[in-house]
Image (cartoon, rainbow, N blue to C red; front, side, top):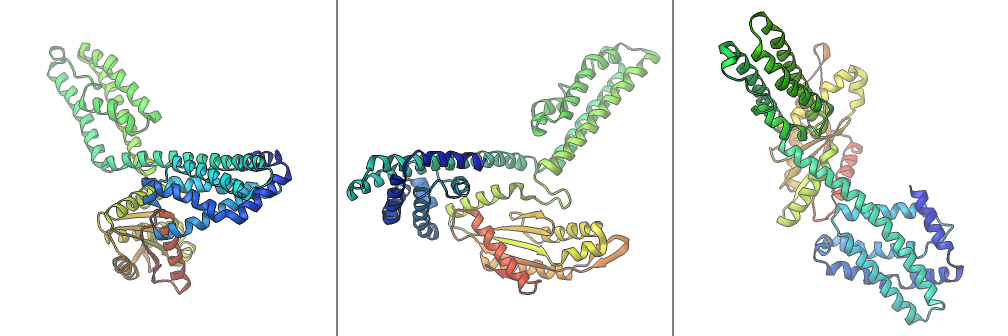
Length: 448
């Protein structure tokens, strides 16, 4: 994909002579600070963007980054590594989406940048101003197009994940829902049997599709399970019960009752088993939980961190991240096998989960890596929690296959939200702190 856009950029550049390209490079080198100010002022005038850019580090780094961007984009030549330049534009768009800088504000800034460039060309009386300006407009527009693409793709992905998270929070009580639906299906079946035993001919049997179970499944269950193939199978079984088996059961007498009754019970069992499979699939795969430990997996990490960043900025509060790694976990797998390693991971997850608050988040990122999001917690509070977890893990006796036992330790890196709007920054800080903890000997907690 990048090569295609790079070829397009190269073709646009080759459409201009070397003279205007060289003139644009000179202007970019000598006036990049003034041009960056044009762009920056527009960003700060927008209320939504200004809120994101108020952080001191963003404020400080934006000018330097903008000046570098002007040099790269306006100074690009056909022989340059344009694929890297394309990738950078798309990455910028993704960052804008992540910190919620509106794309129209960026485009307005680009327009202001062009106006500033036109003023500079006139002031400096640059030869061939029309061609130089046309070249600048062409490459700026191309860069904006690439940024917008990165923005839209990232925004769409974020929206889908946010919606999935919304559904996840609505269905976290799936175990309870499963029991309720199972009970409703069983109640319907028992009611059919009871009414038939009492004389079904005098009192019609209740249709499954209009029962409590049937109403839930048709109106909500199909959506909860995203129209999985098993949903259609359940719907077809319900229709067969209502249109074929119940009428046959009501008409049958004597020994003839056995056949439709047995078929009805088989269909009810089929529905129950299919439903169990759907619930299992939803809780383990689609609901964002790690299958082994039942912790949150990284699927919803961006949503959770974006939400906590927004909350912290709005309420002037803080939160902390603790990156956790089991020390020398490869030795556990090598000595006790993957079954032993899995048991250690499950027990470690339980210890971590039992020692944090209900409002905190605990993720398994993969392998032996865990991550905690401690809400409304300063670095001092996070250090206290992390040290408690470290000591608890060190004291814990971990059970292994064949009645074996082992002990493990963990390393932890802590980072605390400081107002920066991009959650990737705090993730990098906690990772760097974790790396220091491991480099300094492991079995310790380090604050970024």
